[in-house]
Length: 282
Image 1: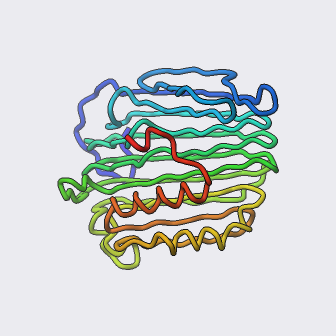
Image 2: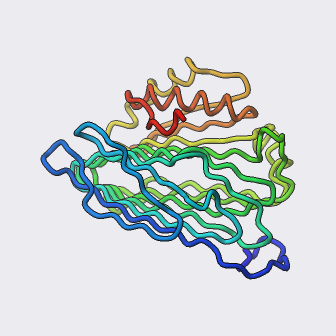
Image 3: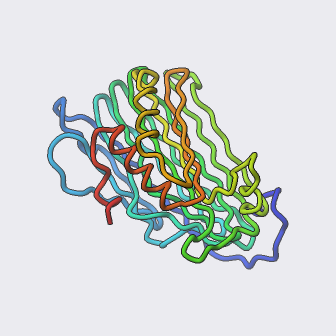
């Protein structure tokens, strides 16, 4: 059904993609993270690159090649006690134009005692007239570690494509020991490029990104985060960091999506103290 905030269009009925991934990992011997349970449905697939013992890396693949017109993708992840998982995607996710229906991407993760998750999907690219609702929800044990990164580009930069009409919502909810500790919602609708050109909204931004660290030592890393942003300062990208309530947030806003992407990669590598997943380099 069309979203109530979007004008109704005479869209033909068509079969839409319904993708689902469920992944559960455990720490088998105190140091090696292994797959406990995995399920795939629709166009979503999971690839597990060969690796050395230790953390586990999982790569999400959308065999449909993009998202459009009411597609619904659902990803659930459980990271068992002491396990360490990096979750990423094979490439940037493209959100094609819609003739009415809103597509939905929902990710729900649960981290048990001492678990670690680096949620590092590659960027999402919104085409003109795209309609997307995205939700990220996490349930953390008191000593779990979550690092989450999401980036969005508005329009295809190679074509200098404006978004004359679009719909985008992004909802983050993080709970630790059952208590809500972080909530963030973004909602843009209408002529997105014109809205982002306003100084109070985006000051001409074509891309934005958020890096969230929810871990027992997150607040103590604020000065380090700010130093990394200062060291990598790039023309056309505004970035800042803040920390409160047991978590740290870095925000990126850029008129140049390529410059934003380069800065975010450098910061992620230095902040994590580890290379990015290999698919990010392809």
